[in-house]
Image 1 (tube, one colour):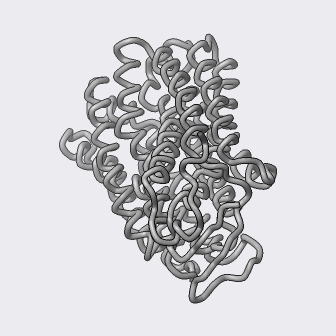
Image 2 (cartoon, helix red, strand yellow):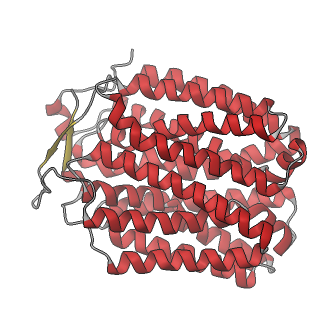
Image 3 (cartoon, rainbow, N blue to C red):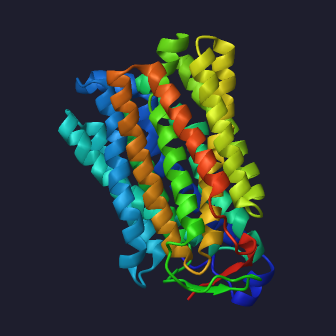
Length: 411
């Protein structure tokens, strides 16, 4: 138990075994639950606000709390974990996530909800801080890009199943039951992690790229450019996406269940975008991220300009899902190729910046919705997304070889 996914280094060089893919699958379930827990307030924002007796903007700001806490936790986690078994760390993080969701389900006011979101932020930060790095260590080198795509596909899968299903459950049985269900699932996944994953101590990097980057500071030009793109693009996305329900309610007049179906559409396209972008980013991460940034910009423009038309709104949501679905894996692979000698540390830094941008986006979106309205918020996020495209176009790019040339040995 707990070691079935391990294999000798010589075997890992040639193929990835079924137990190893099962371990990647369990890791994907963990990221799925992490993102569902973080994003579910988007789908149940209106009833959650009514149940707690607070404005919708305040519920949206709960994503800011979670994002800030996870932004601090993610980059710190790899540095303080030392040689602790990553398998046990991930399982413990899922238990923390279960407690956070349970507290959310029992919250009676804004203060208790904030406490629950702090707990969620800790669990999310730990899982995100090491999940992608762990995924690279579970498979043969030639399958690294695919393993990262699977692990990060939890983001898109949460949109496909987690948030829409949680929205349906929230509409039918109440938002508290939706969060309570997530708490129970987190405990199940914690047990699965202990069973399926091997013992994973601190990784050692062995880079065999043609133009290998020497071990050095993480703050390299290509890393800085990538992080700037992430900040602008993710801030733009979450400033708009956090309030997608009131956007669709007020701009297009969709019902609650129709919005849940649109979120499902968003997620289906996001899942497809995740794997398509993962395959492309394995070779050309920068170009892939730029194409995704362009897609998000166009989608939000359509929603802002033609959002009163149901067909146009649906097309915008589908394009938005396809584009954003690939952002996480593509930007992760950008970071991996830009700092191939520091995979676990660059993952933690990237996830911290990513979650900080989620927090910033939710805060910016909330302030604009409350003070300026929905339409100005959408146009402002268009400008941010376009700015991310410009930064990526003119900034330094990663110079190391393909992702599969990065090999990690498991101690």
